[in-house]
Length: 349
Image 1 (cartoon, rainbow, N blue to C red):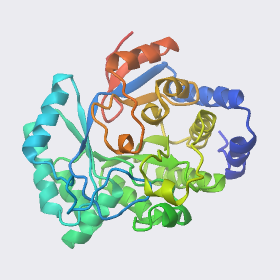
Image 2 (cartoon, one colour):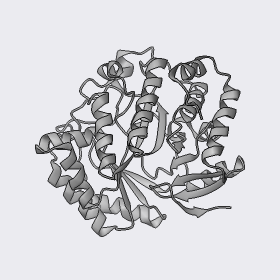
Image 3 (cartoon, rainbow, N blue to C red):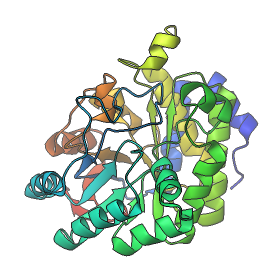
């Protein structure tokens, strides 16, 4: 099969008929997932701290260490959250925090080891590339050592958070203190080479161009060619409420549902080597989340027992397991619960 070029992708984003894009993306999805199974995971986001020094302009979640509502969760508090997850049959925790200026590798090792030992059935999917980068810096160790030590304690995989748009021009505007695109890619490369799988993400809808979106797709595709370490691609739109970026650039338009479905379909066609693509119902809502399954997505993501970051910026959608099953069933696909590795645990048909 001939690969989609950057020029073809640009043409489809700008000129492609939306319905035709849906048909093309659905055909590609069917090639990859011929059994018609659409999956989701029962998990919980645990934001272990909201303390962060990076000050991303698009984020409404972070606090500085001396602010009254700054926190670092105790292990007991984290245990309570995991106990609640297990009560509903959850299998995964997504650990993400701010980039805390004082927490070193030993703290993270103790945390991962504690969870892995006490809750051996729970998969730990945690710590974005920027968290990994700063843990290494503040602990005066290499990235490889940081990743290996966390893996040795029980870290299973890392999320793709912090990618935003992999364009340094965009990053310098929306998050000037954040690691650059090359470092983000390299941390995922190093993780993959150590046997730590990850996901790739994209947050669009700020100041990026169509060309920069395609360059983002291309960087993901090239690393996947090299390592095969990305399990999924997840894309969502910028949520601007309560953010510094909306104060600085108030004329940023909220991306439309048309735009979301268009970019999702092109992502499915361009990322020919990434097997799974998630629907972002958390930012788009259940209806467009369901529509995304007709535009190339084969996974509804997480039941999101707890989500604090995009909610801080104004996205407040919630969905129970039963509603996910119904949305998938309504489009004549087979609903199934999966684990972090995208292995089916339970089918509903």
